[in-house]
Image (cartoon, rainbow, N blue to C red; front, side, top):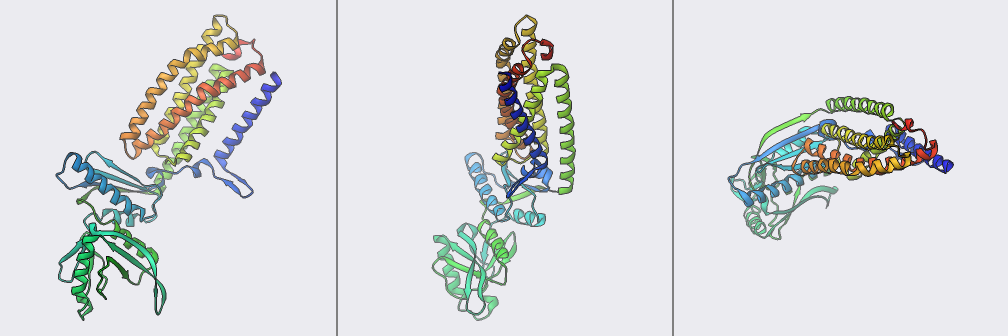
Length: 421
């Protein structure tokens, strides 16, 4: 029994050590490269740097009508942001009539602000300034290559209109195509009172499909296609707040946060070891497993680490320790009344279980509320708090109990002083 327990315990310790080393330093095993925790977990806006913009809908609509307008606006803005190639942007509706856009790690911050800030409706205008159609008539807009007679394939932007747009565009091209002067044949594509493209009409287009040719790269064609495709908002959106966060400032904050978290964790480890002896050592091992579970959970869910998220992680570590303290105190009480170590461990876990569940479930509810109704950093705090509580329940109730029983088998079940009594 002792030998078997010792082998199992050593295997667990080895796995924990290996996991901890990999989390800190990463690993390179042949063709398999495992990044360290800092590289694996995606950083939020406040750590990676980037831009956030808050837009407000300029409308008197209320209730269900306003909700529909905001959902449509969010979808359009999401389409614009996708055109930037930003990984996992955070776009949420704040309150009743505002949308918050967070773009972490964007390379061209000014381009992001320019594109998000274009909130007026898209218009197709003839040389006389007459509106032909609007962005709501555009069904699709995609970059693609088109074969040219003289220069091979060149990037173009394909357009597809709805039934109404097809009719209006056919009427406009029928009127403009016969003209002789190129300046009289232009259809201006206007967004936010700025011309984003000015193609010349060379033929009558009555099938609802058009192509914009020009001297641009495929990336430029993609950006133009995104602006056209996502240019139609149900209402005007006014920029009321925006900010650019430099990555250097965020990384400095991350380094300080990691250092603070490491100091806090070391103090907790030392406290548990001094106060509870063997159970404290077991708690330290369980807490290490807990931290790895949280990091794995964040990576699996694609959650982004933010400064409030780090605070939530540290808070949930405190709650995990609190659960262990509660359990260990119950074990000490059972030892003091003369029960054996094994019986005290079983009774201690049983007596403390309801209290541990109550405290963790109430905090879990708070985390779910923060995640469901919060935005930006608040949501990040909620994510890490929820993951932390779940991991805390697994480690404090199941893993700690199993490790304690292994330690009892290894050290014998006679010296109660080793268990804090």
